[in-house]
Length: 218
Length: 270
Image (cartoon, rainbow over all chains, first blue to last red; front, side, top):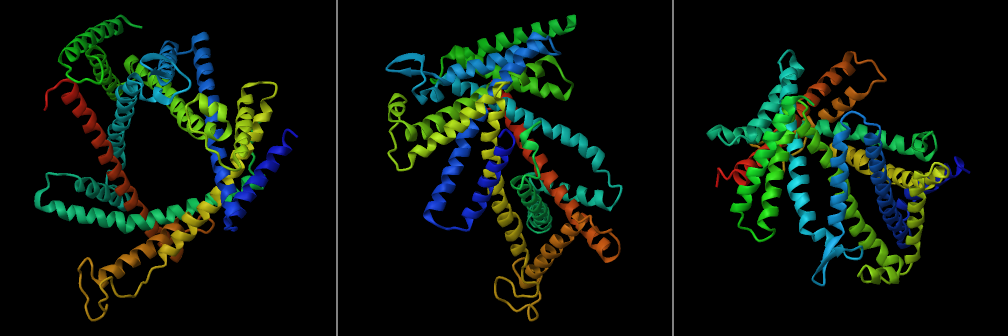
């Protein structure tokens, strides 16, 4: 029961999702849509498990005084403040803690936390990758052999394409960069995608047939 | 923490307070109160600088920003999912009473009762938190894994395999888009038949050679080895182009953050 039923469920639903594609009937399409909706709904419950896990791990880190435990207070503060703002709304002219209106998402503080905390941190973290990529490029881009030279030339052409100070040679870089993206890049990406597709199909089949059981845990 | 760390933190706190004061004094918007707006703009600038400081080395300001981000990000997605999926799409289908409570119009559609099943499976998933009956959560997990596996099987077979192969089967000796004959009008015009044919050859051979490079069941020698060699050249060009594209995307983000610092925070550029 504990181990067999999950395998039966995986096999049944996996097989159904494959076969419904070959049955273009209204009821089959409806069942397909139901199942997709169900997956989204269960996903939200999984998110709740994730939040609970985050809270318990953070509290444990504080309790056991693990390295950098002091910063965990900021994680908890950010979490609870954002939840508080997400459920606080102005209803009938009065501010309050409400579970029955999505006005919380329009709460100025909820939006401010998104605009002035979440977005700046996320955008800066991604922009920082430019520095780390540059340092990696210094090591990788030395034209030691044909392959490294090809990599270097393609990257330089692509970077020059976005340079606004090139003057008359700008369009040349633009055309070459577009050709690189539309022809050789397309070919190589296609080869990679075909490989990924085969790998995904094989993995899906292994999961459905119960050969791959890693999702069950220990 | 060292004494120097405390001094740096005190200086930062002072700078924060000064910035807060000046931003609040110069705020002219009507979305928030000047005090809140001044605080939020200063906080955004402080967090931006805190993240940038990691380029030098890991430090308490970076750790603060990182930990704050984790908490706020998790709560943001929880609130969004709760209001949009649970309240917006699930409750109006399963209960008239709950729909009324949440102020949502009840969607009276046939087969609405089937939406109770994912709720039950979701509750089973929550039982994962219990050490005694946590194993029940595998049923919900099995549903998600099975459905996703079946969906992926068809989707990847169609879009990543069959359609990619079909798009690679292009005419290798044919006239261009303008309908001109290949032999009577050989030109290097980008829209001409010769360039179109060359492009098709590069795509066709590029895909074949790229796949050959990833085929490890046969030793890469002879003709197979040469094809594999061409494959890695094409792959290197692609990785270079992808690298250049990514770098420029990140630089654009950096320019955006610097614009925020110089324009919105310091007001040095108009």
